[in-house]
Every structure is written in C-alpha cells, then in structure tokens.
Image (tube, rainbow, N blue to C red; front, side, top):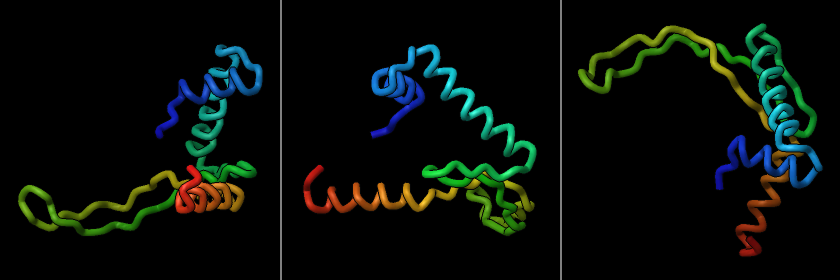
Length: 103
C-alpha cells in the first residue's frame, strides 16, 4: 500500500489531534527543511527515521538503448537515504509477520 502526502496529513490529524491545515504545514515544513539542507550540501540525520545525504556517482559508460553505442554518463550527485536501525527493526518485524501469515 502506498501512503501519499494526503494520507500522512490525514493520519497526523486523526491520530495526533492536528487540524488538517496544521498537519499539512508540518509535512511541508519537514520536507522543505530536508531539501534546503541537501541543497546546501548538508547531511540530515533524523533519529529513528534515517539519514539523508548526497552521493557522488562516478562517470560510467552505458549502452544507448536505441543505437547500442556506448555513451559516457558524466559524474553527478544524487540524493541518498539510509534507514535508521530502528526503521530496519520495524521492517524486519513486518516481514516476520507477513511470513507467519499474521498480516
């Protein structure tokens, strides 16, 4: 199941008593802070969530899917996310429940 922005806002409003307007502001401000810090080249570490940082991908050669010729893809930066240990444990619990047929 995919949880979208609107679903996050609804869950914040229902579970924690936020109004939908203030929940939307919280979600937007959180993503804005992460994006602004990444734009400045900073690493963002959020406890129990994970780490957002920037990775430099090396230059590489790949075949052009249309012509088959080798094309050089220049080095470039990409965003990267590392989940926290807590998040890994949560996913492991979910995986174990699915394997046992609980979910």
